[in-house]
Length: 471
Image 1 (tube, rainbow, N blue to C red):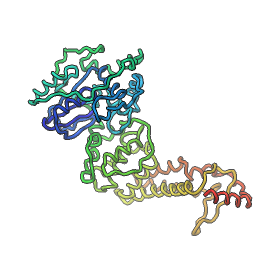
Image 2 (cartoon, rainbow, N blue to C red; image 1 turned 135 degrees about the vertical axis):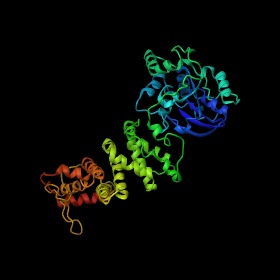
Image 3 (cartoon, rainbow, N blue to C red; image 1 turned 120 degrees about the vertical axis):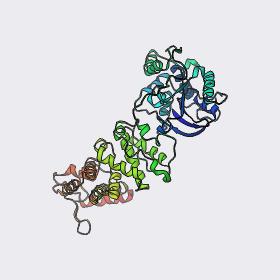
């Protein structure tokens, strides 16, 4: 769940959900310095670190009952049932679904349930960092031993106790039982519990994880501010992003769970809130695509932010090929705008501007069609007008035989060759404009075909009258 950095006593509490951690934290009455999710920053290595573990089945059922029935803590979020029709099968489905996340970067009911039920030995819980372990089954005596270790005294309250329930509501099928044993196999093997719920007393309490194993770096540790409850405003903007020399490959490999949602067009003065509002747009994509969007947000607020500048260009120089298919045209245009504004050379800025103008001019045209003109099938069976003069000597494209659009894109291709980094973005923008439901694609569908006959004059007049009434 959450790694709490506490003061008085100065400790790290590795809080695994549904193990009595809320009661222990309340008893210690320590001031919370910070919360971190999925990692503990290196600067806290010298602090005493403790955790609580619990029989896997009892912990699973405790979370299940809290979501299904609520708890007895007045005013608590879980005082009311949050998932009244939850079943054992559904809960196991949530745990096994790779497209449901478990960290605190997105708030939804399935994510929250999985967060509370994730196996205790999952790396997200950081158990290997603990040097003192309490067992929920002996919490009072173990807590007394903890207090002696910390040279403090405290009384342990009982919080978040689940409401009474009918055990008959907790129906386990044979398939559910097999799935449960497989999901929590490591918990039983590594934490000293037998599947029947008996404890393996061969593991002495208090030092089960006395020698923390060296864990592989993770996105949680590389982007510590995002995976914490830290709030970052403009005065501390340098802390909003990962270190400028972080391993980008890990961000490529980390896929954000969930289904992508619509673009968020809002703005928040607090950067972590802004970043989390953007995340659903990148569900199903790599964390690096999300990170690139966040660097752009930072650069828009502070173009001099050193690690934002470095990360932005590192992503484009080193990893653009890995994420270019994931970025929507909206974000490709944002990348182009950023290159046009802050390119490292005049050439980069010019290439970025070329991509931005192409995309935004198309957006302008499509916006006008959406706002002012009714939809009609394409290609049309008959044309309302045949084209001709436009304004200031400009004429319409000769769509059936002309090649002016292709010539325009060919020139842009030559411009793209001038800059290896910005050129890749421009090339991708052109491809998106060709493939998307844009004027370029529509004209391509009638390129080389005979000109369709025009409407009769009286028919055109009747259509114009109908359109005026509709508008």
